[in-house]
Length: 111
Length: 156
Image (cartoon, rainbow over all chains, first blue to last red; front, side):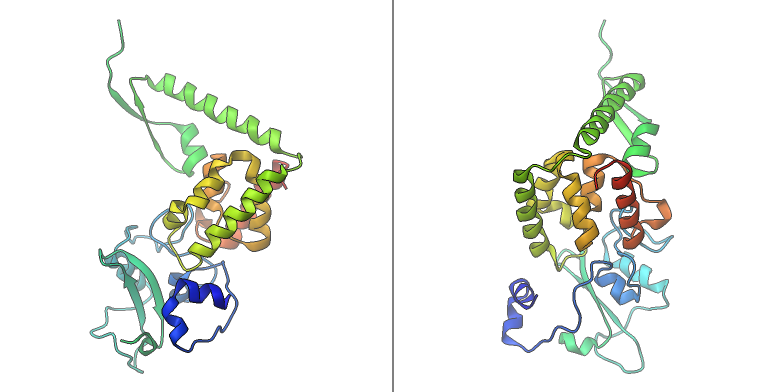
């Protein structure tokens, strides 16, 4: 598992990281950020994925923001860690297509 | 006298049932809705015959080796991805789909054992969608639905 992670993310070789749990294919990163470890959250491919009802199914940051607004989140004014707020981060490619999400402790992601 | 070469769009219940579980549009070039429906029926009848032929048969060793190598390659390269569309784009995933109904027992067993995201591949190979609409994205229920489908069809 460690070899695979380092192959996918080569810069991790230069830093310290630890594996805290085995991989679980029951959910993806978006589901983890949403606190739902039973479903695969994604706005595309409605036949195979979950996305909150009434939120437009498109691979855009706006769609991800709307999805998390259904859980009570609001857009943050900064990406820095604030102990008063529970934050999630949306990662996107240069063209604005979301690729990944992470929850909590955003300071760990270098913001 | 030839038919006008036009684009006819209509709702086809058979495609709707087989491909998406919901309304799906079939576009037929220069064919009447009846002709397109007849073609669709022949396509899916042929696929059902192929699946029936695979049932209860030992999987070819070459197919098994190919599947293991392709599945391993796909799983390694996409372990960090979330988008099912990205899974489908991977050449190894597409090659597994290209193996056709012969690979179904292997895919279903892998789904049971490793719980990997085979749902798009299963739908593409079989044209079926046994997953209830309200279970879309619920990995455990999707897996259970497909494994039940596999048992019903004698594939596992």
